[in-house]
Image 1: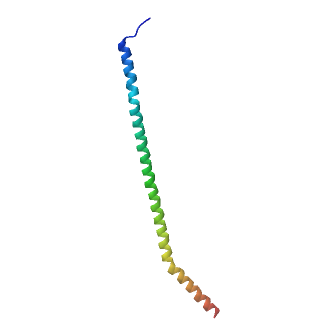
Image 2 (image 1 turned 180 degrees about the vertical axis):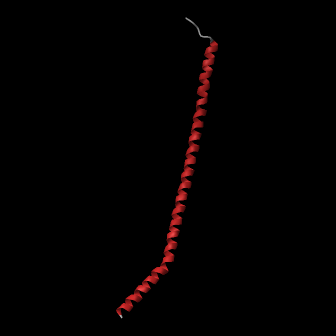
Image 3 (image 1 turned 30 degrees about the vertical axis):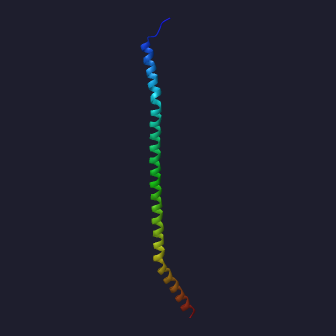
Length: 90
């Protein structure tokens, strides 16, 4: 039966302890990276949503201004049509 040198068993044990000791730090590092990435995506989605809301607001404002500017035109068209109908009846 051959015996293993105590120096070898100590080296293997120290390597195993090193790997087991580093595992929580590696796991936390991975967790922090995942959290940072998720936070980045959250901010990206927030900015995109804000941009879409700004576009909708500008569109609504443009439509409102176009309706305001077209009121006189509609009123003029109605009054002209009324005058034409009145003159046609006479």
